[in-house]
Length: 510
Image (cartoon, rainbow, N blue to C red; front, side):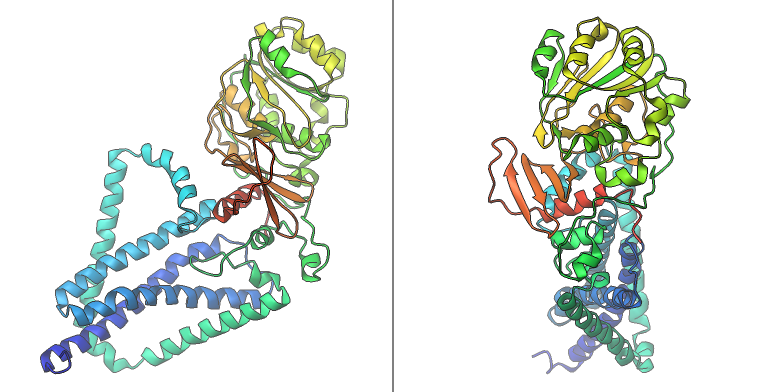
């Protein structure tokens, strides 16, 4: 019946033509917005990887945007051939769609996540506190920003409608269509070849754009430099790269004041001891969900002193940890004791046992970290140390839940030795973000309820009362955190993506 009504048919034809130009305009805008994904991801090392990146960028974003036109705008042109209504509704769809794309890009840049049903729980848990802290002025600003964006879409829709006859005469639709089709075909063909040949510069881009090829644990590990690429390409003996050799540390300058009269002592038992008896005798508070994730004691010592997993050990062992350097330079006596070899970066802060014992036992300002045996721990605890200093007690027992005891209240969330240094800085009154110098967090100001670290060749993720272990081949096992039994649950790829991005935040991706 539509084709029988000549004025209606002409209006529909003009609306469809306008819709194509409206879609093209939004494709160009979407490509610009999607540059956030490109410029905040490691650039491919090869020319073929760069060509694939560009063709995939243009074609995938154009495809998503054009599908929006097919699903939402084109039906309106036939079912509701009212010019004002079609332009208005289409502008709303475009404004919402591009706003979601921008939000997804920012989310991916910060957390390594895309908007999806699978990531809904992760996104909700990450944004709940931020949204609660929004003031009405901030909500008003966001609302006003969307109104401005919608107004721009409406103005662009009207401008295109007024000039539609002029655009139709230019006959540039076929070259533009040919360009995007060429990009689409070449990108998919390149990916098929790369997947068959395990070509890393292309495969590691699988999760860059929303609604693209689904990422796997292997993809994510490869992307962030956690796989030995040469071994991967040879299809032999995949190994988790046990060290990051090029790092940016700290991620940003660390500036903060501290309580220079504070007395803070962290004691880490190097032998199995019953910390519960000591904690009860001294009326210390118990933080049970504390784990030693490291594979060995040298890695655990590094995590305690640097607030980082052993992935960073080779790159940073000659550099003093930023927080300890800060306390030392601000005049707070900073001392470390260990019978085992310490990283060379903290050797200047090392003390022998008599000196360490005397300084820790006496009242006065200090920040002391001691790796002590059972006898030394009992000797220190038999005095009045707990009366003049704030205490934290834990132990090193690789791959086990070890507990944490403190003389001050700590937030109850899962934690590891990487959280100890940020916690000390928080207790000293330093308000610099721990993200700048550590993968851990202060237990006085908890921002997340999960943690990730490495254990020899495995990634270890503790989340939602589960322990996830991902081996060098990208295979994974999930264990119940309480019972230790293997769980049949599926892997939360959104959380893993976010966690790996967090773990490798100091690594230089080249």
